[in-house]
Length: 93
Image 1: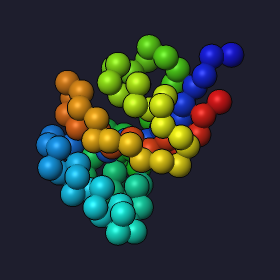
Image 2: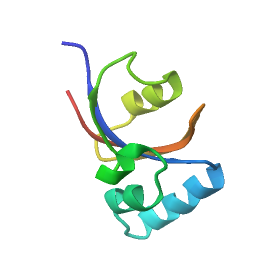
Image 3: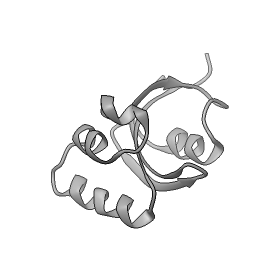
Image 4: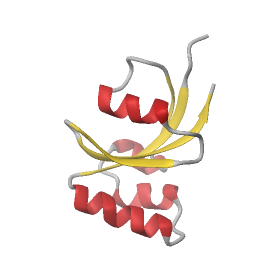
């Protein structure tokens, strides 16, 4: 079976905003709460969770970052045509 990633993300319009959210996460805020409050993606309503996905299901920049990350780590900001993402890898299989 090909590797799959279960990830959550926060999508914002600017790198500056993404970095502000990273600071809040480092200060103890939860990824889920920050996604609900700041993410501009519809997934924000459910804490940013995107569920499981495999290769070639997400845009390349997002996918590459998600597949390189270790579970439990937040990576980003990652820029795509949609904006700036912070990605939390929940699990891999």
